[in-house]
Image 1: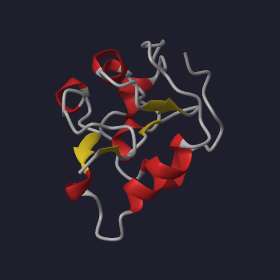
Image 2: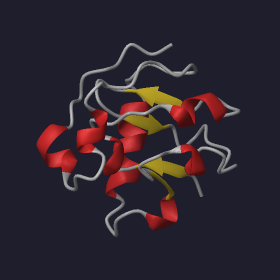
Image 3: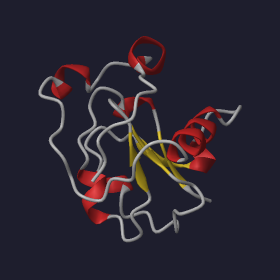
Length: 113
């Protein structure tokens, strides 16, 4: 099992999870974070840190494994992030919104740390 980041992170990107990860397995996109499944040690410390509950075990992924595929793909191309950056200023207005991937997801990398 690994942990994955899901739709709720898009446009919110609070980054509280980055600070607690003991193995630095988070990677940063322009408006989303992902977990590298081959680096995650399944400790679970990141899950309760996410204020929008975007981090879940991969056993709670969609039936087609959508989020594991997205996390795997973008962890290979986005920069690693090990220090919490500045979350988007408008993050709270997107916190409760559903279906953000189709509306807002960006493949562009973030700045990393």
